[in-house]
Amino acid sequence: MELRYGINPHQEARAVPAGDGGTPLRPLNGTPSYINLLDALSGWQLVREASRVLGRPAAASFKHVSPAGAAVSGPLDAVAAEPHGLDRPGELTSAYLRARDADPRSSYGDFVAVSHPVDAELADALGPVFSDGIVAPGYAPGTVAALSRKKKGRFVVFEADEAFVPPSRETREVFGVQLTQDRDEAPISRDLLAPAGDEAPPETAVRDLLLGLVVLRYTQSNAVCYVRDGMTLGVGAGQQSRVDCTRLAGGKTDLWWLRRHPAVRGLAFTPGTRAQDRLNWRIRYAEGGLTPDEERRLTEALAGPVAALTAADREEWARRLTGVAFASDGALPFRDNVDHARRHGVAYIAEPGGSIRSGEVADACGEHGITLVRTGLRLFHH
Image (cartoon, rainbow, N blue to C red):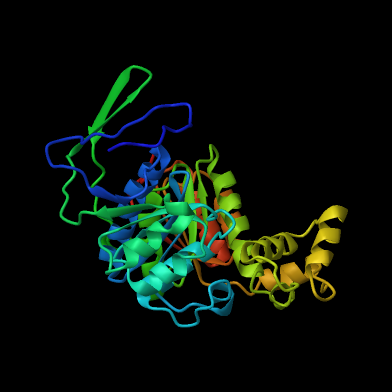
């Protein structure tokens, strides 16, 4: 497969099959970059596994080889629906819009992955969305042509081969050294979610934790994610310290929730303000701490006065977020991860266990009323 360029534009690149079984993706439009291909390969694996585990259409929004968000199909609230003008989309469209709503600022310029063939509704919804490409196991008539018009014809369209079986061994080269390992094919199932205490998580939390574990399998480690109602609220990836990852993803979760605050939803923009600009301003307003210049520009972008949103307002609103599931790709080494997670509405935690302080982690969960499950399975991804 010809690639536009490598990780950077000054690097030449190409892709060749790893074995005799062909390749899992077929390009239908556009010339992918090295990173586009990595996103498509990981994104396709994530949504295929999530759909198989949870029995519903799944979607992911990939950016720089980690998901910005992932979700299975489900209801779309007014905040997620507003930028797209769709109140009751079909299952596949709802899965992607829910995935993109997790962190829409990061999803700008994403690579889309969906578990089922693209229909006309999803193709129409993607029309105004700024993305680099999409991977799916098929396309309804006319959808490839519609998608191919995006980005002046450069939008990358991949068709995934559902029957493709990858080699059992994976190999990569780094600085003249060839590394080989078994492909990670450990099953993710309900059998992993044995409660560490007497209380088992409810069915809704089980499904959220399973989605979280699938997401982590394809996220750069260290990684954690917050999940509720079949959609990620915050994904933290690639941090050297796990608690930094927990705090990063927790901050994204807070922003997801604050975007639903009446003061944020009530911002009335002047006609002609672009959808992405409206979204970015709502996020900055929710974050707080605007500079004088930002306050001036926000005022100019609005058709009315800016409502007050104090620190006390934010804290009171944050306490309303409950029922969040939290999954970690590695053992929680200290209780600080639990303490931080609780601040973001977490009621259920899944982690491998086995650290020297696992007892302290369990005690912290007990103090906060969090149901803890130990998977015994590490899901590092690099």
